Length: 489
Ligand code: G6P
Figure: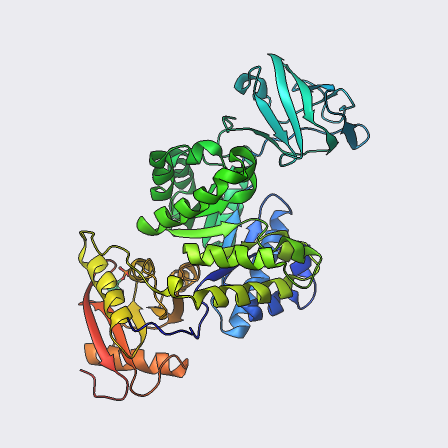
């Protein structure tokens, strides 16, 4: 195979969460310069105006730098939380009795009891269940349930402070995926013009289809992201596949997922989720604590370097920063470190070679052309790029499900499509208007566009895909191999 050892571009995309740290003067510009592809607006924090202002700032920075940066809105979802303590926190001893009382006033928690924002909690629990608070730092055994009381014994003690999250070991808390706040935030996200919208804690494909329905006509062009973070979402292959198919992208949301299923299970789940998403032609983001120590350190730990690298080798489309860029001391350095780790991992043969789909039957012409283009690109010596004319981003999406060391150029005149492609591994979105040119002219101008971006040199081969008609979604039916510097028909 003609894989090169060093890829000139970074294929894996970087998602950065915005927050007070990125609001500091000059930081967002520097983050975009360092290579952020997608920014995340976290609707768990901040006001509608904060998100709107950040989205505007991102658009400005991207435009000034000639970069394509997508915006991902992330809804809070039904994270179940305890209410508050009179003193702000308590310290619980192992073996102590403690009660969650869903009828207790929100600020009245003390050493013996605390309220809860999810009033149906008692209905989902029975004696013998294990509750994990504050991401599992404090653990309760449920002794008995007498609504509105859930009587527990402290199994693992420690500090418990206001509004900490509650998970049930093994999953099974049934709160619906979209709260009233989420529905309101969804409207805000649509009016801001986000490119992707993430739904938190979906239990099934139905939750995603419900979200899609709610988004309505105004949200039609927005990519829907399922944050997989409940044990029941990964309990069996059918449920996971259904969630993936009902979404445009999935996020391995390792925080809550890890609490519910435990560290040991999480490892295989990340690998399976990435593989399934790619097989089902969906995009996948790996998230949570990837560069956690960089919240307060200018350099990552070796363990973090390898966490990012391993996600790249697993085949993730994107790696994500959370608090590192939203609230940390080194947001720009975090992006630079992620960039280095991705490039390092992408040099490995494992990241460049694909055996994917060799035994599959294809069902569509555009799919066949996109996959054939990748097969040709990976095997013909001297190919420098694959260039796909696209209306919706679909052709480059299919091509990018195949591992390769070569850049896939997604050429489109639709700005929303260009931003959508910012999340696809190995795809460089570039503006290109194919209308008004005849066939030969489109080919020549494609090469000009790629050359002007220094993606090609004299003598390189380029693989082009397109359809018979311009602006025809799903119409890709042609694969052409051309050489830079020779006459093109
Ligand atoms: C552009 C080209 C068409 C091609 C289409 C594929 O519009 O001009 O010839 O059919 O892209 O778009 P898709 O969204 O299916 O990737």
